[in-house]
Amino acid sequence: MNTFVNSIKKQLVIFMVIILSSTGFTGCGDKSQIEQTAIVLALGFDASKSGITVTAQILKNQSDPNVPQVDIYTGTAADADSAIYKIRSEVGKKFLYSHLKCYVIGESLAMKSISQPLDVTLRFNQIRPTVPFLVTKGNASDIIKTSSKDNTISSLSIENALDVQKKLGYSASSTNLDITTTIDTPPNITSCSVIAIDNNYFEHGDKTGKTCFTFPGNAVFRKDKLIGYMNAEEVRGLNWTRGKIRWGNQQIMTPDNHPLNLDIKGNSSKNTVSMKNGKIVFNIHIKVESTIRDMSGTTDPNKNPSLILSLERRQGEAVNNEVKQAIHASQKTLKADVFNLGELVYRTYPKEWSKIKGNWTEIFPNIPIEITIDCNIHNTGVISKPQS
Image (cartoon, rainbow, N blue to C red; front, top):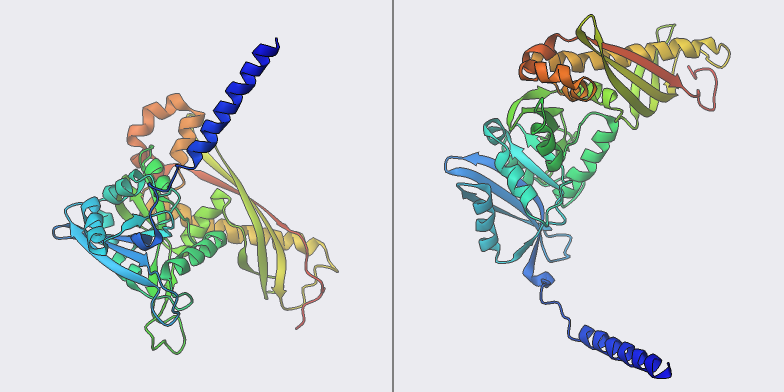
């Protein structure tokens, strides 16, 4: 027995020696030194006569705050991948994509097809499938090259501003994976944020040429082609139905006809579909949580609590109006199911969906959508009557 135990001990010792010895021979052969790496922060894609032009924003390896912290490179080729490799040949370094902040697509390319940018950004294993996908009505290169007023690295400014707009509900942010998934799934409709440059944002201008980025709504796609836009108010109406609004402001009028500002604290929604007399009917049930932020006039909800119910009804009417704007844009202007209600029909009534999916583009614009709004104003703040 002792002989067997000693043999096992010897084998374990030999095994540990081999393991520990092998770690000393490991290295960083598959790693790239920082000096040999180009960190890509943003990519822009535009249509060109010979195919596609890619604009890349690349981080500089320097720390002087008085010097631009990024370099801009462009490459044009028959396809997006070849254009990117042209830039890489010019830079002379290995590209690192793990810090990408956004992709921007120019309108001319978006109207033709976004299949190439989607394919190339999803095929590289280094590129995360969660990078925001944006459209501009001009050239994507202008967005990539523009310096932001609030950040020397404009792609970081875009990332931060887009996050705020998404929480306010004025932008329905989508990633490259979101878009690929939705355009490949019936009804093949998707949308993403529009980005623009506002040169008049600052009251007295800016002599350095720096500016501000804005997000004036969403771009809507049928499959891989741009078909139109929704403005910011219509996008917020859409986001109410998705339960995506996290905070923001909403103004209503008090019973004595004075403005009252509500601070939105949260939003949730539930969309359902039913069959009534053989016809499809959608119901969108929206819940909104808010508090009173600012008010004037003689209204005092603390003295008359029933006024809160009146204010909640008025907020419900305001939310309902925004949602109706989104529905009108979707059904009558774009004739595109941006609400993705077709998928809801497929999940609830798969047999009926199989009969109508081929004609959904013609059917959707005429389907009734019922809206139910449930608003809850939690409190009036730390004072009672308006200070006016």
